[in-house]
Image 1 (tube, rainbow, N blue to C red):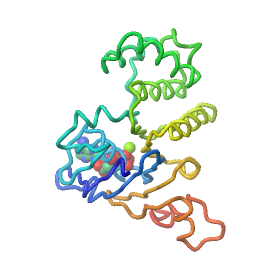
Image 2: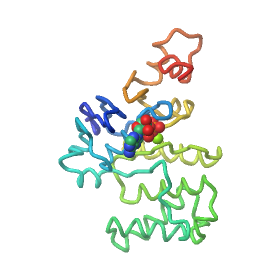
Image 3: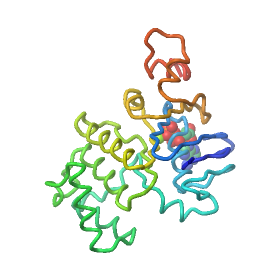
Length: 244
Ligand SMILES: Nc1ncnc2c1ncn2[C@@H]1O[C@H](COP(=O)(O)OP(=O)(O)O)[C@@H](O)[C@H]1O
Ligand SMILES: [Mg+2]
């Protein structure tokens, strides 16, 4: 089953196409990575799919719901970790989690257990009572990931999840992503790290100037270029160009 299907998804800002005619299908429990240089349209795509901005044209179906006609149902189906932080730095990790849980109307009994489980899973358990302003970048990212998964969404969107992270935090996040996949969660991520995309993804799309240039599994894409022992970075540079 295609859990995500985009149909001519387009976003225009003042006559400029930030995303143009984006067509992609993603199957349940796949990890999909959207790759592209700065300004390619990755965040705009995520903002449309997560119902934060309305497409100029086209639409997408997520978990059976149309993002334009049925945004509330889409929101119930998804979790999001944004590129920009959403944490209240003056609050503790627990209080940030509690705030989100209340936003989702989680019952008290379930809330406590779920928060505990996620903080443990993301190795934040012993810092749960500390204010977020004392956290490292990696810890903040892990906390945001925990918050995105609170209501057990079927689809998780991650906009540059490991930007600027230390290797340990990145590894914890990667392992958690792979575990979620095993549990049947579908993951849509954007990244600059080719190694990350190669290791995690079932499917990759390269986007440049708002348009999808190529889609396929990392293996398929590597086979498609003439190169000695190609890496995904070679694929990226082949399609996007070395200087842009
Ligand atoms: N709210 C907006 N108003 C006008 N232009 C925007 C807006 N959001 C994004 N853009 C433009 O759309 C293009 C794609 O941006 P974005 O989706 O953030 O790229 P990426 O995430 O791949 O770096 C960029 O040229 C950006 O300047
Ligand atoms: Mg972005």
